[in-house]
Amino acid sequence: MDDLRFHEMPSPIGQLGVVTSPAGVVKVLFEADGIEAECGRIGLAHDVPPAARELAEYFSGQRREFTVPLDFRFVSGFRADVLRELARVPFGETATYGELARKVGNPKAVRAVGSACANNPLPLLVPCHRVLRADGTLGGYRGGLEAKRLLLELEGIDEAGVH
Image (cartoon, rainbow, N blue to C red):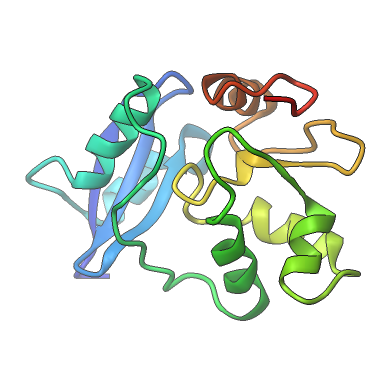
């Protein structure tokens, strides 16, 4: 944990915490994730990390794709496979939990895909907000449904998942 650095930033969906390592972004935290506790365990970043700049550009409508390296140290196995596949869902598009399960080679693992999304340490950068239920409804979101609606709206997707 000595190699991790913490940066807090405002966003339209509330305060975010960005945790980085020399290898890349390790976590993106929502307020409900306990930003202050995480900050207390990790040293503060002295400079604004590139991920925070890219997130600010995303929220201002100037960025559609993230280029910062990601450090997947807190996920492995099936969950890592799901998140890597999820990272391929482009800006302005959505996928269903079932589609992701099929793409990672386990079509019956829909609930496990949902769990991987719910425990995604890199929300926004690995866009779990772009995942909808099979019927097109929002499903859940760790950052809250209002945040999910706002993020989809920012990408030009209405609540029915239509661009």
